Structures are given as C-alpha cells and as structure tokens.
Image (cartoon, rainbow, N blue to C red; front, side, top):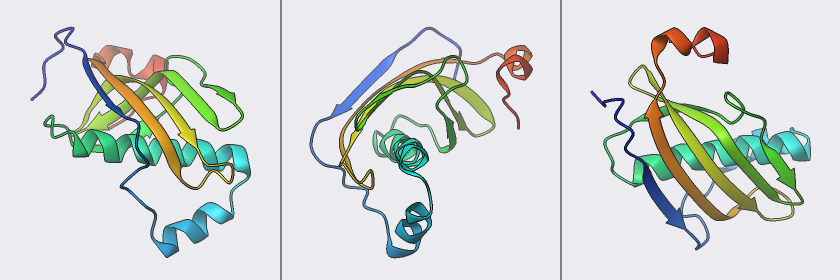
Length: 129
C-alpha cells in the first residue's frame, strides 16, 4: 500500500507515445467532439504512462479536474489538479499532454505524481471507490 508521504515522482516522455490506440478504441474516440477527445486521450495516456513507469501503481481511472480545471490551448492540455485511482486509493496527479491536431495521438507527455488523497476528502472532490 502506498503511503501519503509527500514524495513526488516526476516522469517525462518527449518522444511520441508507444501506447497507440487499437482500431476499436479509435472508432469510439472518433465519435467524440475534439475537446472531449483530447481530454479522454490524455487521461488514457496518463494511465498508460503511470503503468509503464513501474512505480508500483495500477491506475484504472484518471480525472483531470478534481482539484482544479484543466487548461487547454490548441492541442495542449495542462491538468495540475488531476487525480488517478490505483488499487482503490486516489493520488494527486499533474500532467501536460500535447496531441496531434486531430487529437488522436499524443506527441508529448509529462507527469508528476503527488500524495495520496485522504478518504475524508473524497466527497469534496467527487472521488469514489
């Protein structure tokens, strides 16, 4: 189990993503408006990058807006108030995600993992089991 120690982990990747979408998932993303597509694509990339970093987390959900609204400009999404869930616990997350103009592929992704969110704070940030 992870502790709530203020240990911040930073991981970066500047190269194009190695986590390409399969045809079925791409078809689902085609149905989304461009803004929602970018948000969902970046959330998916966050989960994949956290898993790939082999830090002991097993993310199954990312929410980009729990502790603050994400900021978007062109094909860049910055989420300083994000969270992710791993094995039933929520953790603070900040990330910057840049996509291709069609918002299907991630070209740049950086993230920082923060502290575990205390259960007594879950309701205030719309977090759940």
